[in-house]
Image: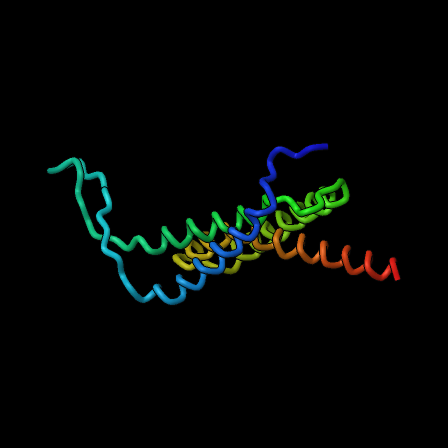
Length: 149
């Protein structure tokens, strides 16, 4: 069965580069401000009001999401039905864990910290999927090598 949602394998490397560079840049650039105009709607006295804001968070978060999506939706070099099954199980685990973390945070985090948590929780599904899927592939390859000996 062919899965048309997966992209070619070469994008996995690009995804890793984008993800690692963007998280590295975020840790370095977090202390600098990039003033950019943001449009806010004001009814009276003007229609548009320009204000300065920090665009770094939006740029970095966008790059992190793009990198994680490229990693998550890239085919393996040898994509077969068992790899597809591992991929499906990993997605299921990642959704369950993500919503478990969300459930716990709903009852333990309050106020502005909850909003900050929700922003980072968007990445939980992708991160847990990547970790679980790669660990499953590692175990599969490890078992395959030990069976051949």
